[in-house]
Length: 255
Image (cartoon, rainbow, N blue to C red; front, side):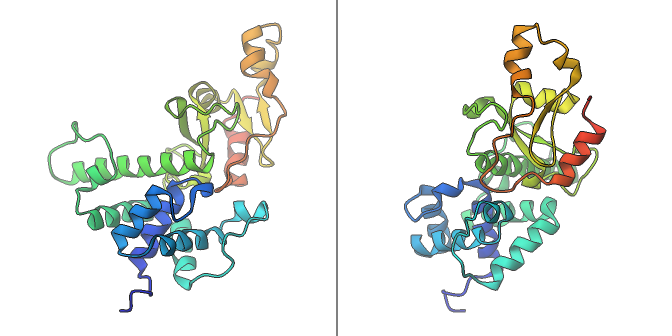
């Protein structure tokens, strides 16, 4: 097969990286793009162009009138649709393929904590898959939000959490979907989890009346009330799905 023809696996690896790096860093000089090019035996420019081709399919970018490169290949459309139909399986497959190309165990390729893994077998495989997918989800969500909390704008990666809108217990198929994620600092992630704040389908921050009634408390004012009715800081990609936010508003939020 001619080298200018991208295989399905190569498209999957390109989309994997598209998800995990900031949109503004998709260029031929960025180290992860150069690494992908080296893994695939392609030029840096070819790898960067393939990532940019995926941008034309991203609704979040379309909403901001950013189209990336306007023409691309059918393989990009196919992989985009595959992932959006089954993030849980395809995210892991992309990491498995990447590990194969790197000739490393998937645990090392994905940089997951592995010293406490069970012995070889089905239990270990299940734990590895869960951790690999969690790592993919975190990388994708934080990169989409440019490593900034969507409530406060805090930009300290060590303090940021990729929180789920639909909890794991509610939706297995969307556990790894970046559109089911919010980049939050630890305090506001906990508040979102227990329903003390929510984000509406039109991306407005709402604070629970349980906190709004504490307006005389300076700490509550500073960390919560002042954000009430503000628009969240939107991600550059993978906008939170309005249906997921609607669920949180109706089923998790304490009005």
